[in-house]
View 1 (cartoon, rainbow, N blue to C red):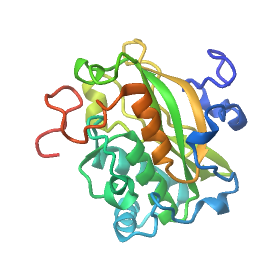
View 2: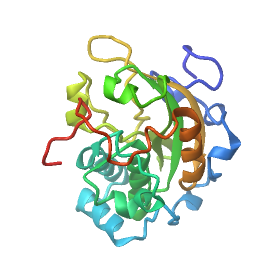
View 3: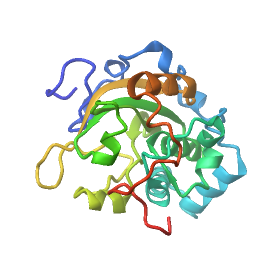
View 4: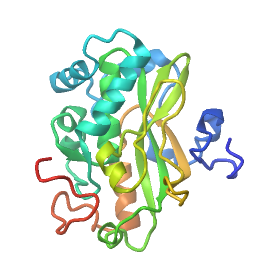
Amino acid sequence: MSEDGPRGTVTPRDPVSTESEELHVADAGTTTPASDRPEDNLMPGEFVDSDAAAVREFAERAVGGEDDEVARAGLLFAAVRDRIWYDPFVISTDPRDYRASAVAVAPRNWCVPKAVLLTASARAVGIPARLGFADVRNHLNTPRLRALMNGHDVFIHHGYSELYLGGRWLKASPAFNAELCHRFGVEPLDFDGDGHALMHQFTGDGARYMEYVVDHGPSADLPLDAILTRFRATYGEALLGGDSHAGTDEFSAPTSA
């Protein structure tokens, strides 16, 4: 575990050395229990609908003719990261919007649906995968987003994926697309299949960027009801407006996205 935090605190400086059991520290009711056995993390789920045509098409387009499993994982990560613009203002309450098959054809989305798509796409090409969630403190917020967060500076249930490669579970967060990262002055994350790919802890000039406060552990499928319940308890209804929030900021996608 990183020397920067107490037991149960996740910092992305050296996440590879963190023991998985030390991360499973939060609310038992907010995740759908996930097996550590890779063979148990290949089947489709209600939201991780890896057998859906749209998911298979997305995955096949991303990996092309690549046969190497690790390389395929990296291609899937990049496809989810960059083909879908990260937009925290499109948080829907409709369960249909969270199915990977719907996310695959959406131009914009936030971290949880993007993690659902990466997880489903990995399963679609035979890579064991499951979901993960963490509460994070993001220091690169915007006034527009901050106004909807009910005075909080922690983003609860940030979504990422865990892929089973080389005999171990690796965390990968495909949330922030490359162009958005450049707007905020950080390099986009890459996933090479050798180590975790979580958010950057610092910006390029050394300023604090993101802190992982607590990790909720792996989940077999999306515990949507529990996540939305906790969102409402934390932020109220303000963040759950779907695509109804007026205004623009750094998170705004190009008009063509």
